[in-house]
Length: 111
Image (tube, rainbow, N blue to C red):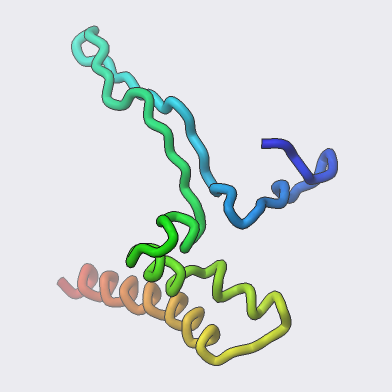
């Protein structure tokens, strides 16, 4: 991956919409058990993308990922459009984990 960012820039290089966020090639992990090497993972390639870019177009998984994609909801904000659907989406994305965490802490605290 070539870098588009100026030298010494604190920001990562710009990505195209179809480029993965994380790419690994020939990932391998070996553990030693009693001095014997055991291969847990060998030769795994991973491309992790954003939302709708994870699944093939036309599949149900693609539709679901596109619907819950933070990237897709951000495009309107970037264009200067404020839509209540996106505000509700981001509010839910913020408040739901906070609610679940509060309930988990309360359950742990009060047993």
